[in-house]
Amino acid sequence: MTKLLELNLATNDLKELPQSIGRMTRLVTLNLSDNKLTDLPLSLGYCVGLSKIGAGINMERNNITDTEMLRKYKIGSDHMHDYLEKRMIVLGEPKLEEYELPFGVPTAVKQATTPVVAATKKVEPPKQQEPSKAPLDEKIVVLKKWAHTTIQSELRPKLTQIQDRNDAAVDPQHVVALAQIIKNLKPEVDKAKLVIPPFETPKAKLQGATTKIEQLKAVVSASVDELALTFRGIQKVLETTDSSKDVITMVQLVKGLKGVFDSTQI
Image (cartoon, rainbow, N blue to C red; front, side):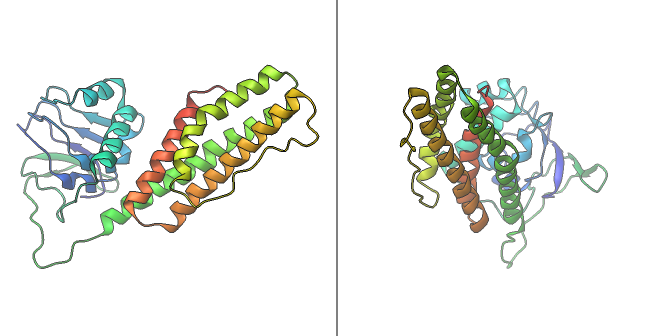
C-alpha cells in the first residue's frame, strides 16, 4: 500500500493516525474530514506528494488543536505540507512501524496501476522478520529527485538570469536591485554552508573596477559564484548520502532558496 495515490478516511470516528502512514510517500490526496483528530502524525512530513497543486489533505470538521497547522491549512496544500515537514525535522523524525496501514476501517484507495479498491482489514506486522527498508529508500529517492530537479530547472536558470542582468546593467539602481536579491538569499546560503562540503568563498574582483557601478557589479558576480557553489554542494550531498535526515535537510535548504527566488521579481 506504499504506492497509494489517494486515501479516503472520512467519517470514521478516528481519534488518531499511526506514524506508519508516512510510508505512503506517493500519496497526493488524503481525506480526513469528519473525524475526531486532534493532531496529525509527524510522519506525514514524508508524504511530499501532498504539497502538489491540486493535492493535499482535507481535515475539515476535526478537533485539531495546533493553531499554526490550521493557519497553514487555510493558506494552501504547499504551505500545509511545508509546515508538516519542518515540524517533523524540529521534533525529530518518527520511527515508522514495519506494517503499512493498521487502520481497521473501510478505506477507499487508488493506485497508479490498479483500480479503486477498499481496505477493510487491519494489516498486522510480519513476525520474526527484518523490517523492510524499501519504502524508506523510495522516499529518499523521491526527495532527492525533487531537490536535484529544482536546482537544475529552477534555481540555476534564475541565477544565470541574475548574472546576465548584472553584466548588462548600466544603471546603478539595477545593480542595487540585484544585490538586494542576493542579500535576501544570504541567510539560506549561510545555513547551507554549515551542512554541505566546505568551499572557499569567492572574492569580488575589484582590481580595475574604478567606478561605483563596476565595484558593485563585481560584488554581485562574486555572490552569484558563491550561490553556484552552494547549489553544487547541496547536489553533492544528495548524490552521496542515503541518510533520510541529510536528504530532508537538503530539501529544506532547496525549499528556502526557492522561496526567496519565487518571491522576487528578477
